[in-house]
Image (cartoon, rainbow, N blue to C red; front, side, top):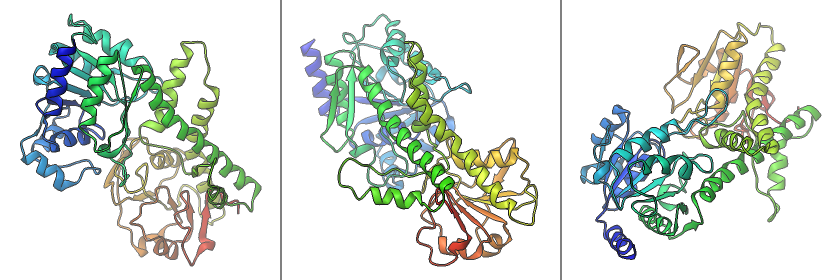
Length: 446
């Protein structure tokens, strides 16, 4: 075994291994590009033929990857993509980076992981390194992935090496990306951890790869990261509602003042809800698992509930402000500014802005439009909406403008100046000089 390990280590360091990445989305494609740009022969695998074709044509579709780097990497011949698993057997290291959504009943859906693993198992051979990166509940690696792979007759930790290493992608973050974020790795045994950590280390420019004792620890660590954020966002969201109820207290000012304390406090800010994949979904993954052990994650579940109620609260804010105007809610013209789940990205997964739009439509609003420089079109309840051009004439024609995503490209002075009423769920109008009397701020308590 030591001889095999040393041989594999040598191949990894000398860039003689072939890397496979299953799933070419926000997690998988940046990872594939990092390996390929560092000289490793890399193949991306995805069931979506459009993604495969885009990669092979050098057409980038992930905002966190620089277009020039992407084109250069594809042109080098080190990166190619396929919509089948024919290359699995020739890969020395395979990363599983597929989606892990939840069902309508808020239960984990690991069907993408299972499907990818079954396809990998068909081409599995000795001495391959398999690393699961998709966020999931503890025991997925050992309780689901390992048994499927071992149906091949090969044994994990002996014939092939298996580990979990969670993704830490933050869409739109210009400082921290795939190649400079410290990584956690936990294997099914010591040799699996060592080899997986060494492979992962080749894709990052930082030296820090944290080895933990098992995949379960790594899986729980990832959930903790995101549940930590969920709980703290829920805290300020609840306080924002309280400030609105009390009156005369601006939650944004409160948080900024508290953040001046140099220890024991980390600022989190309220908003119209949470979106994306991890923060919204992860609490439900853990809550589901806890029930199998007769345990209720009350604190975590309550935080998720608070955050999921925020779009309803924002919808009520819109209805309240419109009730003061000489127009019915049904006929009111409402403009949504920003539908991506966070600023400066094109990602609309579980976007709270879309939830607010959906709720307004369900309550009878008939004249809703939106603008988002990153999202040209959205589909809600069988209807298609296209981003409208943001002009002074458009703003003046609206009864209410709702800021749900605070993109940096928006001129908020221009927006406030030309609007009749602005509901700001992101504190985007903080530095606006004139027209503040038109602004209704979430958590301002006016």
